[in-house]
Image 1: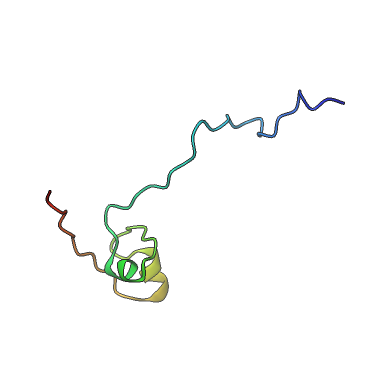
Image 2: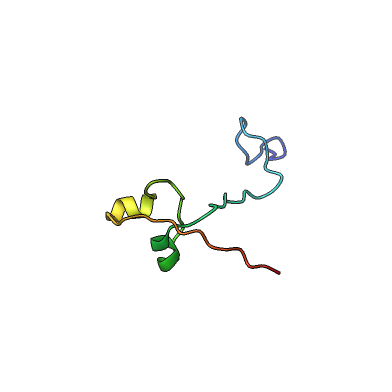
Length: 66
């Protein structure tokens, strides 16, 4: 029995050409920023703040000028 005809990938999915990169959130809320958590950026309250019952507020950060 030869393994040359079998592949490890599922038949209904094409092989990945590159690794998936996570989507970046444009702005993290103050709680997630302070705790260095991954913020999903949902408004008016992100999932982390919603789960903990904290007020979720977003403060824009000025981009550094070069």
